[in-house]
Image (cartoon, rainbow, N blue to C red; front, side, top):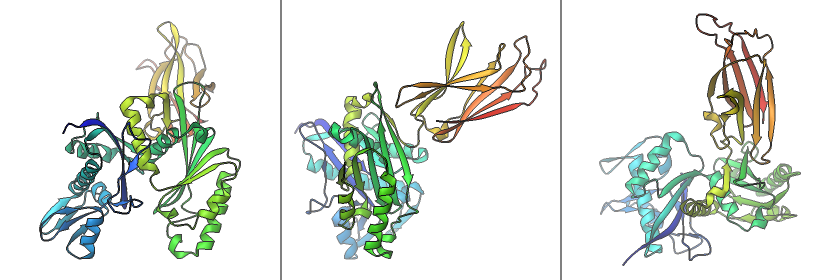
Length: 420
C-alpha cells in the first residue's frame, strides 16, 4: 500500500524515560504513542531487554515483564551509556552504548509506524534536556542509520521544545510572558519566555533559573509531603513575584500525583496553569512541522545558551561607515571569540552598536582609549576582541599590537565589561 510522507514526529529522549508523538495535517494536535494498554502511560523506559531463549530485543512493557520474570538481560539508562561510550556485555557479546541506543530508537519508531499506518516520516525532531556539541554529530549518525538524513531530522533542547510548544498554542496563552516549572531527577528548574513582537522575526527569549538547591528530587521521598508543598508554594510565589505571566506550565516526573495540585490552583490567579508530562515531546512534534513547512522563520528563538543581542563595531571601510559584527543574536555565547585588527585614524574612541532583539532598538557604547599615544601616520594598530563571561555580560579587550618593526607594541591593554 502506498505511503504518504506527511508524518511529523517528536521524540523526547531522556536517560530514564522517553516519549514519542506523531502528528499529521489531518490531526488537531500531536498524539502520544503508548506502549501500554493504558493510554495514559506514554512514558517509555529508555531501556532494552534481550530475551534469553530467543535473543529477541524488547522495549516498553514487554521489556519490563521480561525483566520481572528474569527471562532476559535488562539494560537501562541507554542515553548515559551512549554519552559515556560504555560497553555492555550480554550473553557473551559486547554492545556499545551507541548500538544499544540505536536499537531502542529503531524499535520505538517501528511501533510508531504501526500506529500511523500508511504515513511515513516527513520530519523527526529529537529533543533532549541539553544538547552537547560532542554528541550531536553521533546522534545524527544514529538517525542516518535509521534512514533519517539531516533533511528529515533535527536535534533540539528541551528549552527549544518548550518554545515551539508555546507558540503553537492559542495566542492568548502567550499574550505576556510564559513560565515553566520542570521537576525531574536533577531537581526543580524554572524557565521564562519573553516575546518581542515589534517586527519579524519575532524574538522569543528564554531565561533559566536553577532551583535544585531549594527543592531536590530526593525531597519527594525524604520530606513530608506537607513540607514539600509549603516549600514549593513559597518558592513559586517568590519566583513569580512581579512577573506578568499569561500561562504557567509544570512538567516532570516530580509533579506526578496530586501533591502539588492545591499549590497550582493557588497560582491560577490572573494566569492559566497547565500540568502534564508530554510537553517536550509535543513541542518537538510542532517543531518538526515548523521546520518542514518553514513557519519557524517567523520567530528568532533565543534559548538560555545563546546571545540575545547583536554587537557590532563601527569602522570606516571602503569609503563608508560600516558595522563589523562582533556577536550575533542566536550564537552560542560560550563560543563567541571574535577578533579584528584595526588602524586608528585620528580618534581616541571606539564605538560599539548593541541591538536588543526584543525591542529592536540600538544603543551605542563608547570605549575611550585613555593613555594611548596616537601616531599621525596611521600606524597605530589595535586588536579588538570580544567574549562573554555569561549570557548578559560581554567583555571587550583592546590590545596595542604595534605596526611591524617600525612601531613595536607598547603592550597597552584596555578592557570594558558590557552588561546587556
